[in-house]
Image (tube, rainbow, N blue to C red; front, side):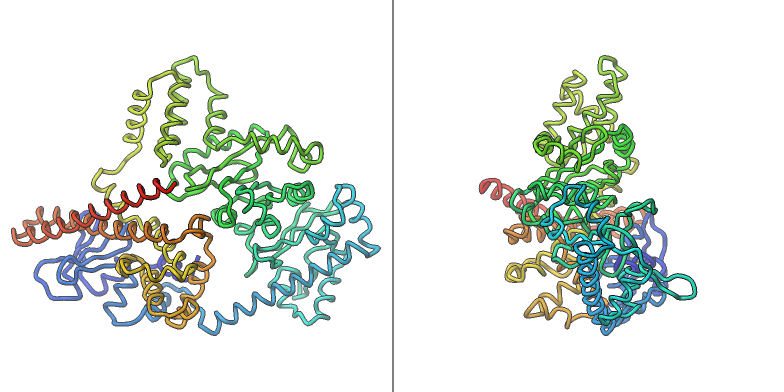
Amino acid sequence: MSVIDEVKQRTDIVEVISQYATLTKAGRTFRALCPFHSEKHPSFFVYPEQQSWHCFGACNTGGDVFSFVMKKQGIDFGETLRLLAEKAGVAISSRFEAEAEGKEKERLYQVNEAATQYFHNLLLSSPAGEKTRDYVASRGLSLETIANFQLGFSPNSWEALKQYLAERGYSEDELLTAGLVIEAEAGRTHDRFRNRLMFPIYDIRGHVIGFGARALDDSLPKYLNSPQTPIFDKSSSLYAINLAKEAIKQQAMAVIVEGYTDVITAHQNGFHNVVASMGTSVTEEQISMVRKVGAKVITFALDADVAGKEALLRAEETARRKLTEDSIPVFYRNMIVTYANVPDTEIKVFILPEGKDPDDVIKEDSKTWQQLLQEALPIIDYTFDVVTSKLDLTTAKGKSLVVDELGPIVGEIKDIVRRAHYVQKLARLVRVSERSLEAALRRTRARRSVKEPAQEAVTHALHPLLSSRVEEYCLALLLQHPELKAHCQSLLPEYFENSENREIFIAYMRANEVKLIKEELDSAFYEYINSLIEKSLPPASQAEPRSPLTNCILRLQEKFLRNLESMREAVLALEAESGGTAAELAKQREQGIEVSTELREVFAQRVRGSRSKGDKE
């Protein structure tokens, strides 16, 4: 979480604005006389659920808590952030600290590289490493593979690595920060990894960011990883991504397994597009990483155990509650726990033979592995198989349960053609007409909806998470493709609801080069800007970024207009209830008509863009 996100999370917009205006509850909103201009009738509204505000009077503007304080106190974003951070108890680093952080990371890369060479040399030539060499040989790994993956050996010593690195100028604090040593009693430190086979973990750029280590005796845990450090986070790392990225790009497919040796054996046998999640949940960052290098198909190897299949079914309801347009699947120890729509990417799974892992399968017969990959099922088809395998489809009860479990999953598919395919498949399974099944799915969706339609529309239109994701995607496109600046004429600062995104966009438009943007902004932005520059984008966005940008601008414009329309409708309803004057109501309705006209034009542009894209394809 960035410092900006943390401040937002700990700040309540109602509490802040109430210090400057007398707020009155009005349904699910608050209203007040606008604190920015004189008026007799309240036209200023605060939306707690969206943490936003809007003035429908003379100001005709709005935003989040940052924009309110900036406007009210006449200060810039950096000052506002520090003011709110102080009240929320959040510490903010200075420009000097941000620069120092970059230098610290570079030192950590260097010390990890030095440790890698130390471990690797011990494995290849030290007498103490003979047992480990025998173990590696028993696993069938060649010298070339050992060199490619820079496998190593950590001696059974408390301070061997510590002394080696100290002689090369690395301080004890640096070793602690890198996770290479552990602080024990009385402030003493000792090596973290002892008597283990070492697996250096690289980032996509080839930096050593951490280590995995396998015990060579009965020591526990059997596998030990580096702790989280400023450069290493298991949830955003994939083992062997540095070696697999070219093959993933060439084959447009990534295979994700769980263990280090599974990956190493796969690569040695010619399957260079395999990476590992290192036994953790597969996260959005990891999926984005393989998509960015060109994966259009992402395949997962699943254990054959029944528990894994049951975990899938138990998790479906949770998954459906978390679905958004751009959401992705998340896995844990080979058990699917979320299914979602991934644009331009197909998610597949295959089941490993009973009691075997990828390492076993590939060693026994690499053709079997190849066949498993070819026969991998799309995730929904796999879900169909799991659900139907435990139910009797010859009974009315069994058919009803199948529709209850699979119907909501099918209903969440965004692509119309794919959804129609699975509606047809489900209809055939339970032997009912597609029309009857569609009607049943509509009733299910209606029962699951607990909000009033009007409020649902307002909530959806204003949803801050969806809004933030579109804004971030747009900024990432612009920062990663400076040539797009010439195509931003129709993108206005007010389309960005989040103040930090608006400030970055304004700085982007002012700066002559992307590298100069930071000079326009407070150091509090640095972490966020770096994340946008490094954000993984779909391959299509990298190859042809102008079209995604045009679509982004239209989405942001549509979002802005829908928000305005939704909020204005709420104001009209409240004005009518409170006996607002005819002139005020007429003015609001007239402005609402203007917004609706603009919305229709935006929608028409998106339709034309979709048709144009379809013609090209």
